[in-house]
Length: 390
Image (cartoon, rainbow, N blue to C red; front, side, top):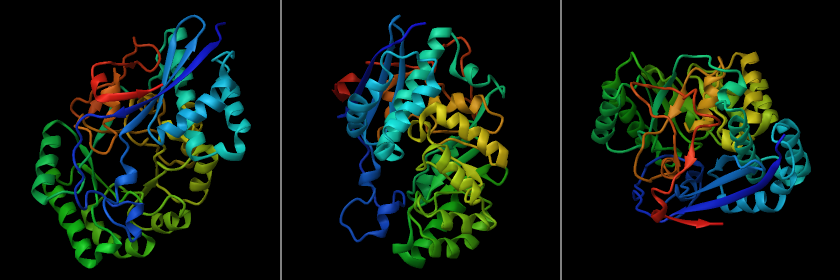
């Protein structure tokens, strides 16, 4: 059996045009601070990391990460690559535990776990290529004809602009939508009314026979939520996403006991982190991000754990690694889908670095059974807009 020959991590720094930030674009954890300038600055990421794991036989698996790419690259180059080079990629469970346990003192969450995720995703892509099968076939196979996807953008803007965007998405066949709140505790009662105006306006366009999800991106607190949620209830949101900071598990649990389902997990890590969320009844929807949570190896376990609690898993941020997990699990009813767009927050960079990510049509997408591995490749079409750090 072929062994892992090398691991190559690169940072892609976007130097092309970006959509300029605007006020009240999306609430976030930084809103609680007295600060100057753009509070979303630290949550925009105009860098991406690719991780290529090459086998002795020449096949290359591709992983990726979006959080702190420069730090993640250093972690891979100096710590994680030496732990997998020379090993059998099909010993993925051993390799995952080796990376996890050898860096336990500092790598169990955050940057370390993001680096493990990138390597692990690449190993799964490599395994698929070596056996000529798509990754979802290695995880359990097809559990649905196609994957339903929800339209994920609708950042806080003028009412007219948000209604126009919602109308356009509805016309493209989407039957579920997620919008972001732009106002939080610092904006007082007037800000609450601005939030409600926008929810009402989007509902007016998409109607009540579609799902509408709302997101605060950690920008609210428990007191604000308790005042806001009763006002939101009449708009029938399918869930409220990340209402408070990720560490406030008790706050999540208190809110999740109410009438509006609470979702979260985008900023949680590993099987153990999600066991804590589920034991606390903190979420009604699990939203890990595969390229943060510990890769496909960890995410596959979380799918099974959440199924035992009968809590659905709808991974954060679209992207093909998440789609393979969704396709292979009956506990994953749909996926998030970011439309192809000019570079704004940074999620869009995935479309500028990779080719092969499946396109959404009429609110669904499918995975190609003839494409081995994840089915993506690195493209040079937009290379002129990147500075690449080897």
